[in-house]
Length: 179
Image 1 (spheres, one colour):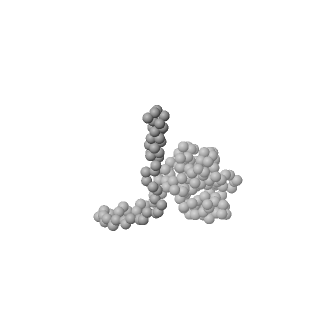
Image 2 (cartoon, rainbow, N blue to C red; image 1 turned 180 degrees about the vertical axis):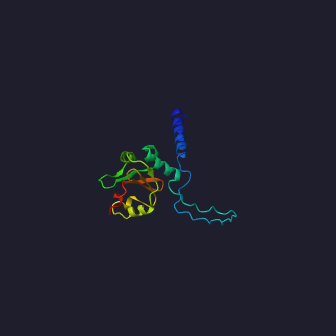
Image 3 (cartoon, helix red, strand yellow; image 1 turned 90 degrees about the vertical axis):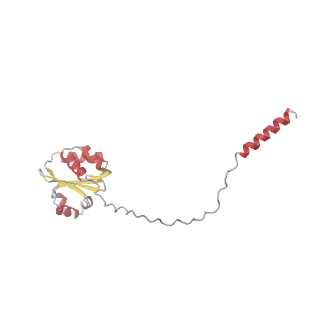
């Protein structure tokens, strides 16, 4: 054999080897496979876990930290619990609506800074009356942290959804009852 046919034969062999490596290994199925029989359930003698009871979104220590944050004008104590956005409402004003947590904290702490003697002993009947207000009812859900300043009757009501403050309602005690 002359060199040219040998080279052609070697090239042909390389092409055949290269093409052999390109063929698919398995054809793709064209029909939906039938379901196989499921094994019988195995009975266990271990009791199942009792159903979990739903815990409140914020525990007592977190709620206390939020109240302390208002008392001390400490945004770091309140901010981690705020939703983004949070609805901030200053009663009898045009302020504010949905805000970032930073803006809501700025509004809240600047408005509450002059008040003192904060107590969470807000009468549940008072909260029910605020819930009847056509202006403020939506900002007083079932789960709230409500506090009142003894120095001037300023009230702050944090609306809680799961583990976040979703609304902040601030106003004088009598103004929040305005209907």
